[in-house]
Length: 75
Image (tube, rainbow, N blue to C red; front, top):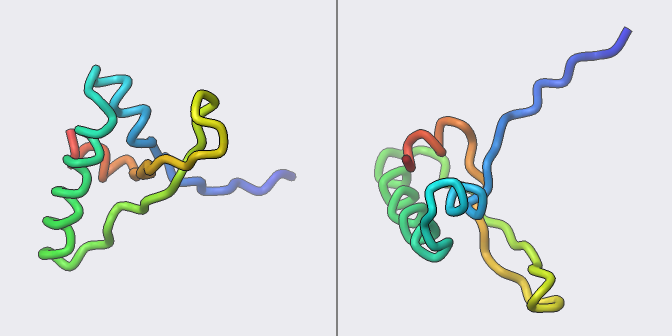
């Protein structure tokens, strides 16, 4: 029998930018503002990571991975 793995649902800041027709840099700014609010409330901040884009070679770009609840807070 297969074990069920509880994998949290996440969404990247790039996906949010695409779905909302916003520039990614503006979504990053909004997430940073949300992180400030989270910090004041004593909540965990949204995790930052990096991705590489095919057009920029090995250059790394910032992105955030948001949980479902964080995504709803952002929207």
